[in-house]
Image (cartoon, rainbow, N blue to C red; front, side):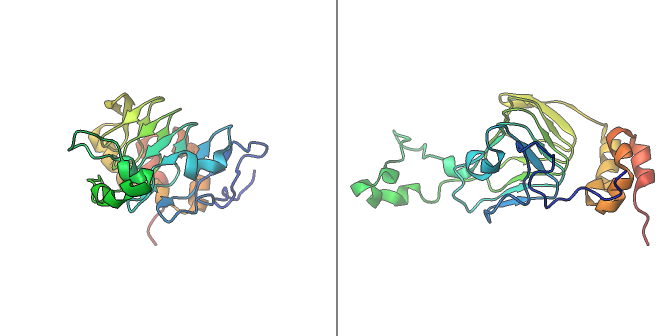
Length: 215
């Protein structure tokens, strides 16, 4: 058995599978932050994630993705740059078309935004999920395939649909509090390596027992 943990700096962690990329060594935009080991899977050039999967990202709002997140093919984050004015008769963004229309670019500045889009740790996104601007997704959440996430998702919540609705939570409130306190995603990689089986198939009690001891 290989005693070493997986390397978060390797772009393609699965030998012979270029469709899988770890996002932390891939992203270059200062507007995108991704934690270690989070990955994206796409048979049609996963390395284009920043341009094909993060859309209308003109800033200043950020996309923040935590550690150990799994993003299925076609997951897309719609950012605040997609906003249009809705307080006049037309929603068309005339100034962006250039010419003399560009003289009215002030009409597009200061559009309301919902702030950063923030994804917690250990979140699983199914196939072709769409996340709308400013959404916050909690730790341990699961987003069902094809969902359109328009509002915040609680820790360890399972959501699905368009718009996505909370279907259930993975644990009760007491166990969710225990899981958040353990915060296994902050453990040293070597300690995670020792307890992979507990992380994947153990109970909350098992996880607490496996947590690193202070000192």
